[in-house]
Amino acid sequence: MFHAFDSHPADRPPQRAQWMALLARAPMALLEPALGAHARKTPRWLRAPETGLMMVQGRAGGNGERFNLGEVTVTRCALRLAEPLQHEAPVGVAYVLGRSHRHAQLAATADALLQDPAQHAVLDASLLAPVRAHLARERMARRARAQASKVEFFTVARESGSAGEDEEEGA
View 1 (cartoon, rainbow, N blue to C red):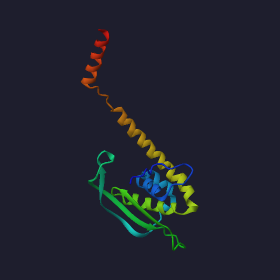
View 2: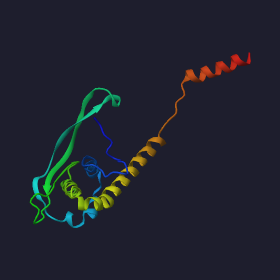
View 3: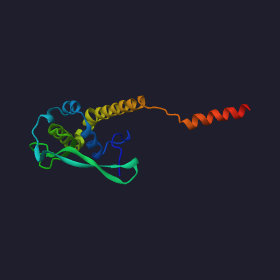
View 4: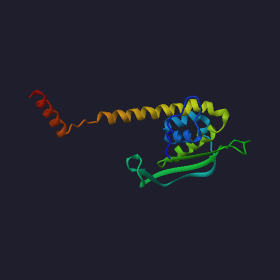
């Protein structure tokens, strides 16, 4: 089942799956400044960043049978923030496309911080909202490029059919 993770209702906060999807696609230029000092701290690694391959599936026409489309490079990691008095700190997890270990670390750090109710509202405003806006701008630009290349084709049958109708009406 596929879900739209890019947008969520304004009256409720994003769920973990939604913010993890946003963090995986967030540009580094937005992640580093929003995390501030947390981005510079060394975490307690549960699984250090590692890069591997993952099979991607597709569907013909969006609703046909699934088929293996190909493999993509993915980097994953799991961590706990290295806070001195937090033995049960939340676990931050991240899977990101590509080979950027730093991107995976920052996304996992943000995931751990977003699980803390005290920091969730601040990070939602300073990190997730700008990422949502950035992804919306990218989506609109992609649609504009696709719309600019759209071509309207008229078939010969349609053109000849309309000409024949005009002649019959005049006779």
